[in-house]
Amino acid sequence: MPARAGTLTDPATGATCTDRQDVLITRDDFRLVLDGVCGKVTIRASKGSLNVDEVTSIQVVGSGVTVLNQKVGTLTVEGSNNMLNMTEVGEAIVAGDNNTLLGDAYGRVHFRGKNNTVNSSNKPETVDEGSGNRVM
Image (cartoon, one colour):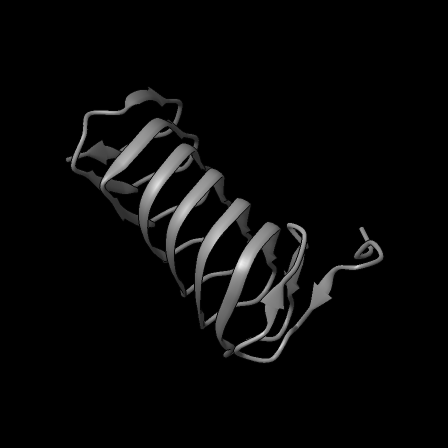
């Protein structure tokens, strides 16, 4: 699906999201810090890191990605071997394998993959359709 008009595609570090602008990351080995409040952030790349404060949603399709985030409505992880260090997540959908999600508050966690770990300060509502997943 092509990026819609106004989407920041493979932005440089330090870029600013305006008016909940969407972001698409396709370059492997990326290192990004994004300012402002972003809309949907889609990561179709691998082996990179993203630091962004507030977003509507984050989708990680790649592998070996690290994300630091303060607040997100929906987090979707389809790739494997990712590290997501979040503060507040409305809903996390974990369809990939061997992912680690950290955070203070997860509203709901829906596992579809295997061997994923969520380490949260609270006890989120959990649905597990995968195997070997755990909430700590």
